[in-house]
Length: 364
Image (cartoon, rainbow, N blue to C red; front, side, top):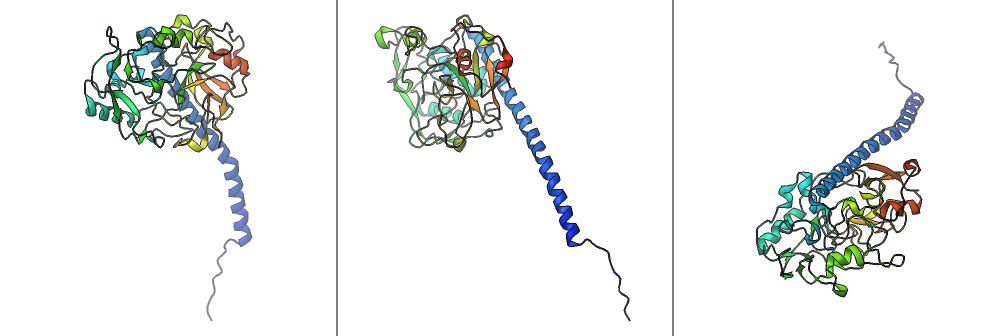
């Protein structure tokens, strides 16, 4: 007769009980893990914005004015064209030297024609640190909008024409086949309303100091003093960085601590990879001149990124509750999405005379 050895094991009921307990523990700990991960991502975002803020502050100290907004979409940064209203590229291009990215800024320096355009295209494809919020997307290159691959513009030769007396226009060299480029998650404060100058419509590279626009004004003067809207017919744009701008710290009349400088921008969550329809809030290179991709306004309130909603003007982010903004004094604060719209506008307007007394009213 065989001897049978009975081995004690788990019953099906016991296994189900154990699995249930594990599921409950995972359910309890997962939110805490996700919260910790988002907290870490948000700290990276704050650090990014802090470094951008420092670079903009260093630029302002060196040049005497905040980084200019450049000449509008499709105009790409020019290493030969210095800073301010004579620089076609946007604010990010202008602060590269102050982010220890001078070698990136100088791609194409001194080259002519196709070689110059190719070097600039390589720059547009070169991911650099601190321009992306990890809650939203990683540092990478992203597709450009269909139909815009051959529209980016630079100068045909190294004329170094900008700033030279009596020299106004230079020939264009198109940067061909820009199928992908870097995109940023931060935008500068252009004020409480947009501009009415189509930066892409300039016929050629121009001397922004002397080029005459409407009523005989130079481009810079028109942008700084004479652009109007329905509520302020003589005041001009009232933010920090916009088309052809050269805003000095003294022109921030409300005080540096009371005025937005740069912060997170709102995006449709469907378009983190490619913005390929009419929203146009994230379809250009981060180095472009003034555009909704890299500057925002406070005509209304901010917003948290949401699916299917195309807002191209507001600040905002992928974070819950609040987004991050750097002020002109270099400080970085969290601003609640529920901030009073009037206060939000006041913080965008550098010279409306309204100062914020109670900061706890806007922070989360």
